[in-house]
Image (cartoon, rainbow, N blue to C red):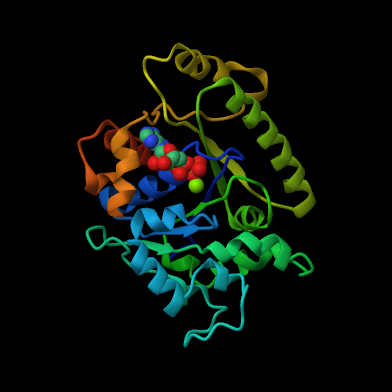
Length: 277
Ligand SMILES: Nc1ncnc2c1ncn2[C@@H]1O[C@H](COP(=O)(O)OP(=O)(O)O)[C@@H](O)[C@H]1O
Ligand SMILES: [Mg+2]
């Protein structure tokens, strides 16, 4: 199999829907299109992990098999059978039994100290890319759910990625944030020699009756600094089912397939595939 296309979900703001997009886009790519998908949770808050695994299973997995904290070799003293350095050992295969082909590398709270722990490590932003290389041919798509910053975990994701995808809410401060994000990415691309390209911007948590949401979505694509970006025609509505689904450790496709949020993600998955050719 050829190498997977690796996509990082990116925004320096928290709470904008990065994790919700990562989880549900991954689920639809696997479920409706038969793709082999690996979702990698790089955020210490572990929301993507907990959106697909009951908390007890996640804790057991962390203990017995390992998480991204082990992939980053954060604590070599842990006693586990598996080699802590191997990413393949940490993969939860078919994490949701109803969706074969959707795999997950869970995160762990220990990732909070990644920046400190790797501060003196040479090539620290390339660690993940090296580990990922061993499994990259097993997948069609690898989605990296990043924390809301551009620090070590995110830099590792970016270094390994072909594309970044920006979930953003359509409001004024978020559009300022988009500008800052693109600026910082240009800087990182130069300094760390990333080859990454922008897959596009997807508007999230859109409320139909909020005028400035509609106004922002109309305005941004024609603004000079954003004209080069692709804005996905499908937007993700604010939809209660999308925030309820994680409580059952299920993607929206299984929790409530007829919810507006489900229809949006089904359409977004098609648009992403079309755009990737
Ligand atoms: N489209 C949406 N509709 C309703 N709730 C959403 C939507 N997107 C995200 N949420 C909720 O908002 C919170 C933050 O979303 P999340 O995807 O975790 O954002 P991020 O990863 O950017 O921090 C979560 O509780 C999530 O369930
Ligand atoms: Mg998140």
